[in-house]
Image 1 (spheres, rainbow, N blue to C red):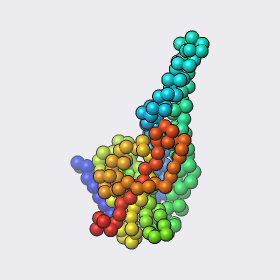
Image 2 (spheres, one colour):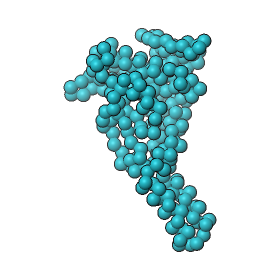
Image 3 (cartoon, one colour):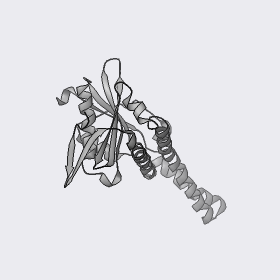
Image 4 (tube, rainbow, N blue to C red):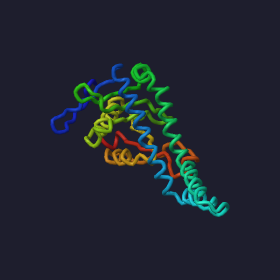
Length: 231
């Protein structure tokens, strides 16, 4: 399954193939960049929560009331914004670092030398512009595949590459005799969630909970694609 799918954008053909060691730097760079892109979205998410506005108002007005200083009020507001940013910002920074030192440290060994694991990249000519992985997700009653590490270079988004990557994992799960493709994402990854719904994924319990992130309105969202219902 070197090239299971192909899609075109005007004059360009995007091909998907198995990962090679020469792709390592590009894949790691795409992953890190993708994580850091979501850091501003965590602050926007926090500012939509009533409890976070209370913290922000307290940071602005308490220094003003107690000291009468507008300078301290501004500093207090900045401090409150930092407090709101830290949980989500640290989450994505930690997520990036953990991925780079764990599975993406040696992609070939982690994904291509283990049974049931796989890793693909999308290329345009000789440029790698996307990637996706699949790992086993076995429960007491089912044999599933988990979609992981779906990445698309910023300047190639909106061209159908994400759908190509999803179809690749779905096809892999179907050929492997699995019941479903499952995945987890965060509530600030709006574009990804819309994509999964378009592809036929249904919301499910992600099985991951983080009370600190929930304070700023950020939480895990699970999705499931049932193979049997899409035959």
